[in-house]
Image (cartoon, rainbow, N blue to C red):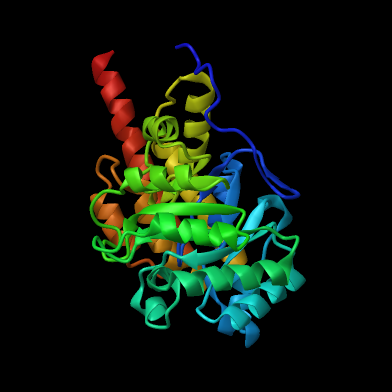
Length: 345
């Protein structure tokens, strides 16, 4: 199949930072820790950002928060995402992050819909206070220059107050170098479909790069959104769960026009096992196994005969239990495939 003539993904420059492939992993709480970010980077993801951390927790020198913002050399370029609602506290926390980790960028969360975040006026709650959002960006930019400051936002608080264009203009004026727009309101959480019309309107309204986010789960969907929305790149969130191949398959499709097949059972299981090993290295066996339960289920989602295994992994207590479940499933599926070949021969 003939490749696409005009590149849809071009490098983005944010001051001294160049993002060669603006196909990013969207930050997700409880998911985008170092092991998952590393796997996505290995498949061509051009930018990763930590799961969000509280400005106050960081200033209190929380050990857990310090661990969450740790960046390793093999995942660069990488950013740290902060949430909060006080300009001074956010500025001091951002400066602290730069001091500790020297991230490639600081990302400000204006999109999280979780009540524990919004009740403190942070996350997507900032969309209800555009002037405050603007001042937070202004203060953070001043505190961390020349490190680029970016913003991750939703299109509005609810369907009656979609104000992404206004907020985008304000944060651009305050010095933000890039904006990622998730095409849902806070009220929607993750239901319904992302509104790419609003994302496109933001891309037209500002002169800084905009990444579009929402419902990117397939290389063809990625290509269509890049072609029709005017965004400079994409951020993939839930489409990457159990599926780091979304990045390599999308990049290959954009470069060649060829749609690579979905990964098979063996590749999925082997990647899940490697993910488990990385998680154990990162968090120790007890926490790693419990966090890997959801990832293991995501890796197997949609595979024939996997329902029972996906249920069983939620009961796994030890790493060996999880490995046995995954390898047992692989053995059964390969035995079925071999038998099918025998019967057809």
